[in-house]
Image 1: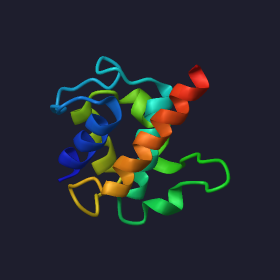
Image 2: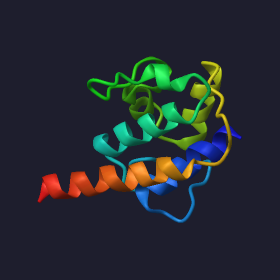
Image 3: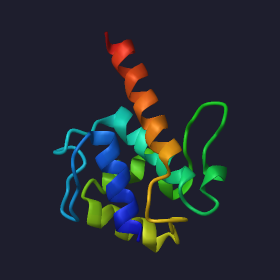
Image 4: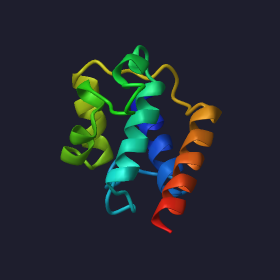
Length: 114
């Protein structure tokens, strides 16, 4: 379930049809801003994860910090790391509101980059 959930978040963020267990976040087009968005959506989709997101700054602490995604950019390695920290998704489906949030964040990023 965790692999399906994270793969769905990556696919939504990186605009790919699907992401396999050997998918590499950066080779699929990810960057540090995409990593921040992914980690935030994952935090919102796990049990108790909303407490990891600082509402003032949007930063994420604990096992879902961007640092861990950067250190484990292959989906199977990243999910193994998350599982070792007790991370479990509430569902293996990404909530529609999360996909909408990703789209809004991507739009803002595009506008900022010009």
